[in-house]
Length: 412
Ligand SMILES: *[C@@H]1O[C@H](CO)[C@@H](O)[C@H](O)[C@H]1NC(C)=O
Ligand SMILES: *[C@@H]1O[C@H](CO)[C@@H](O)[C@H](O)[C@H]1NC(C)=O
Ligand SMILES: *[C@@H]1O[C@H](CO)[C@@H](O)[C@H](O)[C@H]1NC(C)=O
Image 1 (cartoon, rainbow, N blue to C red):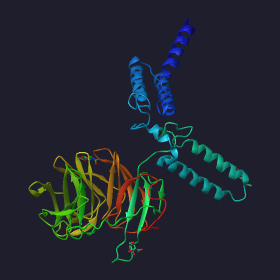
Image 2 (image 1 turned 90 degrees about the vertical axis):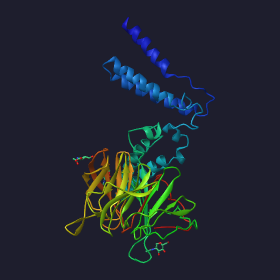
Image 3 (image 1 turned 30 degrees about the vertical axis):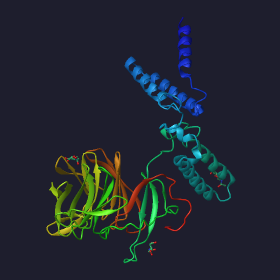
Image 4 (image 1 turned 90 degrees about the horizontal axis):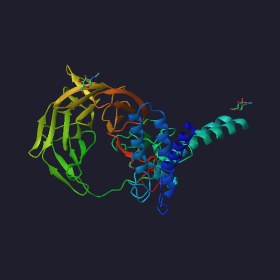
């Protein structure tokens, strides 16, 4: 009797795994692969269950999983407008993460070959390792669902860093590089991107050493710039720039950040100040001052708050660099962590549960700090860049951006 039940339940499973995928759907093959993967995950999930509520949960996850497969309910037109990561496997040769994974594996293969000298066994060994690593790349045998697999290669965020030296200080180099968010991958030649002169002029000159700026996305996206050496500010919408109201004091070597849809500017070197101003419909208004007189810091908007990161503080008339990070939340500032390094005129960028700090002119370090929403829980230095750089330009990019070809604006 028991074996009959087993057989029936086995058949029932086999039945459910075969969801009908419309063969005329353009990506039926990926749909089937996806469905198969959801099914396997479900079996694994419910095999680990000891209660019926657990089994129900597994069944719910399974339903969510297959509904999101190409050619199923949420993606009726296959991979067209389908967010499922398996769709990157439609043409992996164009997928930045697939290419990145292969590139990293090839890099290790090259290093391995170089260490072999005349030993042929060693060459074979290198190749075996490469074959194995390759199979874990997104869309390959051991990761057929693309970037969603949690086995081998991590499809992580990458950031481009651009630094242009100053014509008046010849010691500052030009450089640019692409770095993965954990620092494990860097390339230092970015040549395929051009910087195009739009011919559009700001109202006032702007110098990244003294001035502060932030992109504000309320309404139409615009960049708010305040000169620092004067209280003048302007708003640039990508097409034209126009003067807006001036801050109450000059904010020199300050930083600006978007907070609750408005630009906020924090601290100043000259005049020395801990004042924080926020732009309202009736101009710049004071809000809770920073606990310290501060300048050369970088600031970052996080959920329900604003961070200031490192910079220079004043105590008993002495200025000194700090590793401290402060948070403004609910009209109160609090110290929420200490970094490994100090930073001056740095730039920072926030992704989910971590942020990255790229130094300007103090240590040249790049640090990754884990942010749990309340405090910095840990941090580590992940890179050191090759020269000083006032307020590096940083932005998220695909791992393969800007690496091929070079027309007329090239940093090496
Ligand atoms: C050649 O390489 C293999 C694998 O790396 C190693 O086990 C072996 O000792 C090497 N032979 C010589 C002669 O170095
Ligand atoms: C950096 O690039 C700019 C613009 O291309 C150029 O004028 C300057 O000479 C470069 N500086 C150095 C140190 O190479
Ligand atoms: C964590 O952050 C809160 C403010 O968000 C602060 O009051 C507290 O002191 C911090 N704790 C630590 C261990 O830094």
